[in-house]
Amino acid sequence: MANRPANAGAHSAGPQPGTQQGPAVAPPPVHHQDFPRSRRAAAAQASQPASSIVAWLPYLVVLAGTVAGLLVASQGSQYAGRGAAVVGVMMLVAALARLALPPRYAGLLASRSKAQDVAAFAVLGAAVLGIAASLP
Image (cartoon, rainbow, N blue to C red; front, side, top):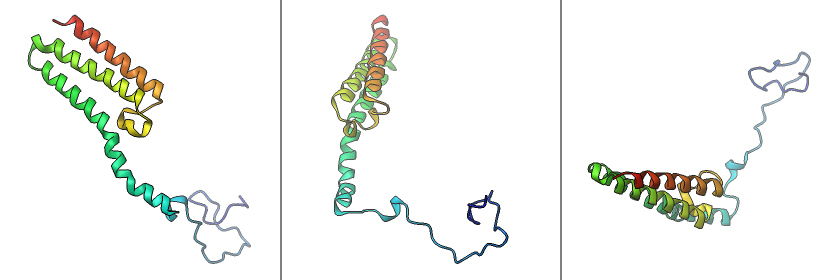
């Protein structure tokens, strides 16, 4: 405990007897307090919104297709197979998009490693298509 400063936190031993306390010194700045460090970093931050819009596109396409499939399936039991097929195809589209796009453009389709994402979307799409084939 002798090496700990007096203001080390709630569990510190407090000021040690016989030690002098000088004026409080501010801690050194952390990495996020002095950004942007260069003009290149500022330019990268300025261009980020455009790339984030592009990153949302594959996700929005898959989401819109899935919602369309659910709407078709909700029209009645005779359309349940068609709606499930649309949802299954959209999961396979998500697998292909995750496989083809780099991580910065895959957006919300990228949550794990590329292999795990592609495998999860492909298995889910194939399972939903299997269910859709068994429906009338």
